[in-house]
Image 1 (cartoon, rainbow, N blue to C red):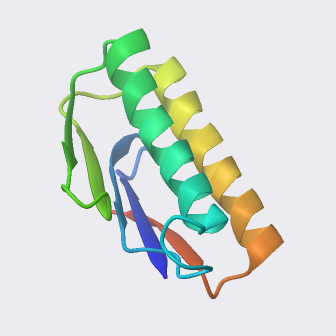
Image 2 (image 1 turned 135 degrees about the horizontal axis):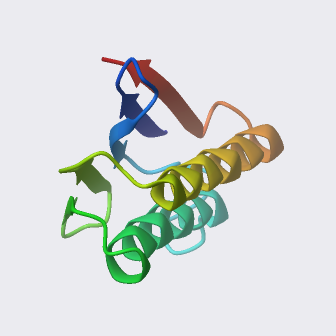
Length: 109
């Protein structure tokens, strides 16, 4: 199962998101659920960094099963929209394939 934890402050500003694990929907190289989750999360990280030039710290594990993004400043409105879009995409995958393969949580800290 892939787990995604999204943290935001009490004012609703995103602080970070962390994606860990493999979906386990199919064999490695054939797992469309894992590929979809990875594409959504990695694209969000890339867009935050490359297109919006947000102040973020992004770390990827070598095997691709662990991705984290930490905002170093309060994200812009466009950055928040990108994270909202990531959550929307994750919800779509979870709705289509089930909670068995993807669990995400938004935590206020």
